Image (cartoon, rainbow, N blue to C red):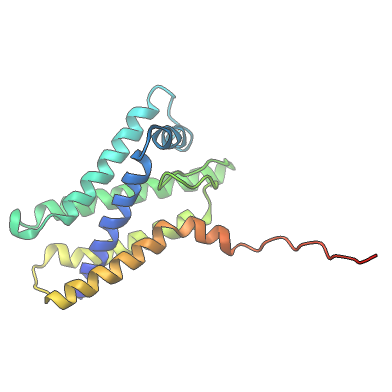
Length: 187
């Protein structure tokens, strides 16, 4: 279980780090995310930048605290980081469900790039990340030691899973059925 928990922690840290980097890579990305927060969060245009900055700071804090080595502060920082991530994921899921129920076509900008409207792919991703958070918990609360080979394998598995989750919106778009091209007729 220690290996699975380590992989889960790595997945969460990398996914949230990618979200922070995607939203803050330039002013345009942050502005697009701010608009999404305004629409999905049902907040005024004046409050949206503050809430957007708060989300980005919470994501960054969660990732940093979950990655915090137990040797430098016990389990409390990692526990706080994990609980922050769980709270954010629940909030994000509620916002997506509310938008879908209202029929809103708004881009999530979860990672700063996708312009596709929120939908089932974001709900699936959030459900997967919540399950990953549950499997990360035992490693946060129990202290154990993995060999360097197991740590390396955990990083490889975690990075691969995080990559799939981060580019999941684009993968879902690619996998959607493309409209059939009209048949060519020769004359």
